[in-house]
Length: 397
Length: 55
Image 1 (cartoon, rainbow over the protein chains, first blue to last red):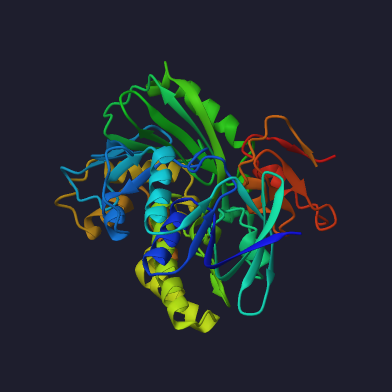
Image 2 (cartoon, each protein chain N blue to C red; image 1 turned 90 degrees about the vertical axis):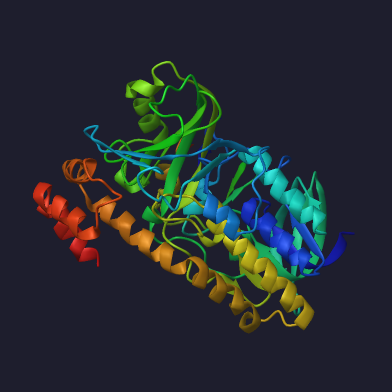
């Protein structure tokens, strides 16, 4: 006999998006269960661990030194020929300036916030199937060989880019185009000797077809060194691109890996349909990821926050219909929809450029005094070095 | 599908599968062979570690 637990809201997946959804639903007075298939929340990480300061403020999270490993001062952008552009906070306001996290601690803290708000947490518990049951869902679960069911009025799918929960519940969240899912791989390394340990570095072009390489410095000489590629543009597996990069980058001459992380990154923009009757989808499962940077912590938490709040209100109203839950979609797209569309266009632009054109763009930007420059001056500079790159830019807008 | 020993169960293959044929457990992958009929190879190509191979 399979036993059944009843709850108002069930959140499947305890990444930052799921935990945030659980926290806000519980704060709003709903009975909440947050479950995760992993034995340890936050591990293994699948992420370069960068977040913006403004983003954390927007989702109402106070910075805690336990999960911050580095505060950042800027960005170094490197073209295929090595031409680099430095954007530092003393010369330009960088909206995405922020922190490098320790996800294994951060994710646990976010889940603890959910627990302190009143959510129950089930770890090492996997969703095995979902079926509609009247005005709700029944989710079949397995915990260490034991099967049981959870009946909920609202189901929140936060089970990552490989989400099955939303698909089982009837929403189409699969990709038709493989270019919308990047293949990511990363080493956490020590003995990394960057020119400025407070600046994150990005390397563009054929070094990572369809994506880019990143070096995100953490505490001391530690850094996340990783890349993402689009498989259909790549000639070899992502790991081979990363190993080639590590062999040739001077900052990594003596670097040694202590951890390897892999995973997919959904970069096609937010899925069109992220709610239905009794269901909301958040985080990577809803492709709430910045299409340009691949960063999804803050955008996923934004999704989680709005979903959790709407879930709590819907429980109070006893209305879990798609019409009621549409408020989640509206609030989310009001908050981050426009910026996601903008980043998608910039990504498409960067993907359209050859290595030569990327070099020209870097040259155009290299000697710009950003605090004085305006858009017109930047475009003029670009026209001088690469009219073709400007033409491609024009086609996008 | 042959899953090599070095698979890390990251879910990239499941995420990219257009037919939702792959279920990721903590230390295993489960393929729905009946659903996987398109021979698209997306999962094989997308694996960051080259850990999938067609039988």
